Image (tube, rainbow, N blue to C red; front, side, top):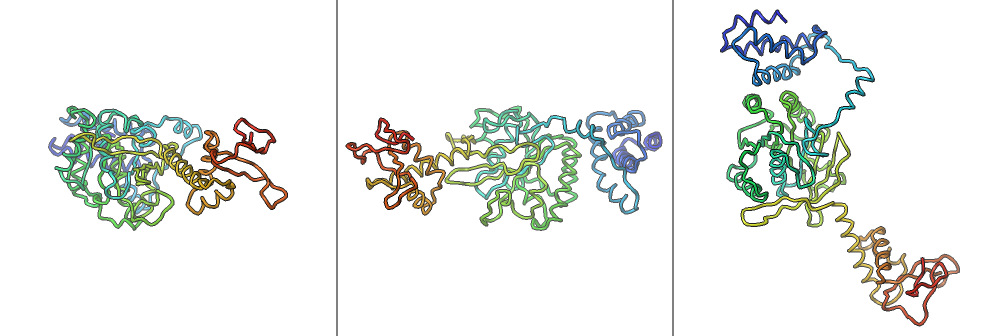
Length: 441
């Protein structure tokens, strides 16, 4: 390391930033070529910090440390490209089985429990006007205060930067005020900050550099980008161009130890069964992110589906509500399990269908009810659950018998309780008569 000490001593303090960049580039080249086999990345950084302390008027404070950390990591792409161009082999780290198992044994830290891992990249997508920005802003507030998103998902307290290239400042002021009022907090001391219309763009080197400087000084832990389509000039349908965009994002994530959430729009409706395929443009988006939340309106409900989860089992789809609880107050809330709500609604629909089918007073076979239900879009599962519930509560009665015109093969017949003749109780499948005169089965 002493080879870099003399040049640093000879450079005036005002030029130290350039000198550090040069030193970091050289160190990184040595490190990547395997010429520093006895040093880890941390040791390289510590050695350079020591050089700075001994050779310049700068102190090795957090700002300098962040500067060095950034350049040692940010130059990786350039260094590796140079090595490939010159035909030199780069050092390859080989891990043993115990080393891999030791890595796998580390606990995953969560920015949002079960949804967004620390150091990961997530995406929240939905059609325009569904409320994605409301959800993202609500999430930002909860992370910034170490709360619980929607009252269901604990958040790690962190410094949050929301970069908004879609909304104007008056709209952001209005929304933030309503969200804070809905939570009953003032926002004073909240670890949440904004860059509204600052010109951030992954495809613009000059704009990126301005934000790199801001990241070094501000040191956010979580960055929310709203929305992705406004943050690059690439063709979203071109996998290579989008891979370049995400390569730049990965550099920022690793260089500044960021956790990122991207807000994105769905493609136009095309009948996709897989919600992850609703992401507009290239499949590179779905491949790149660690976690994906897709937002849709289903049966008048806003449903969020955890479409992808790289680090843990996906959370169950859930309903969200966005309501103005009072003038100047907006509450974003958890509305329960989407699957449970859908099952309950399907059961209620099947129940109504069955009662209507039996309203003539005649016995109707289960098979006939299923066939008519299929025509109306009522599932077999929902019909059987509804029949069991109606029989349990005594609204309908069931008889298992051989259909007329056949000599074998028993079938279930149902009728409304009030239409059943009480003078001749019938015998069900077990041959026993229960207290309702119905089958004991």
